[in-house]
Image (tube, rainbow, N blue to C red):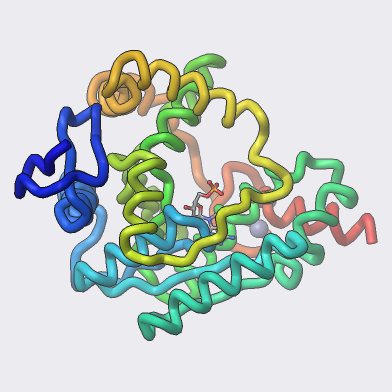
Length: 300
Ligand code: AMP
Ligand code: FES
Ligand code: ZN
């Protein structure tokens, strides 16, 4: 197998693009895909400060690496979820990455903000762990961006994540999540920071290859509360489709974004208020995060 660009020995075949690359040309291809995403969805400019939510995993550290290499002003944000050794190890990976590149890293403790670490939130509130965790992550990334004056939050969601989320929403025709699913969600309120996903054009395999070729040390283990079996099942199903028909995954996602999403956008229009307690944005009176923190407090 030869690299399509230079004719040297290829290290990776990308069947969905009907191509293959050697290591340096793959790294170049990866960065170009990120640049294309940033440009196409007007995610941010080099003048803006970007807050990159980093979990210590391959995707978000690969993203931070690409942005730093590309000359963007990218600060990392690590949320310490307090999930036993998993959190200790992932925090150490983020700190080591930041130190090696002399890049700024903010850390926020969920225990301090919510009143309990993620594993105790479930016991205190009976909410499914991953839903309380997801709610806290969305809230705290937005809050950190507002507190520190960032115009935009970038996450490491890749093509596989986005296609699996889309499949999950379509299977239940969840119109509100469909309206909100986008590589770039603009700010619809002064207290809601723009959210972008610059890796949406790159598969999980490609981000793993990039992280490996760039020598990025990331946490390989998944969170012990394993991301809901259903999202893993959706990824598996999509991988089988991809195997039989390369490009199926990206056609599914890109087709939705180009042709179907606009039809759902109206559904997503809701009235936004400011939370009576913390002032962040909510559709009700108290935001979901303050309700969660109240439940935790009552249980203690
Ligand atoms: P996940 O929902 O775990 O697949 O993560 C999706 C994205 O959310 C990651 O690529 C990160 O950008 C962000 N993220 C997940 N966990 C954390 C964390 N503990 N701290 C900061 N960002 C996170
Ligand atoms: Fe949130 Fe696993 S990362 S519950
Ligand atoms: Zn609130």
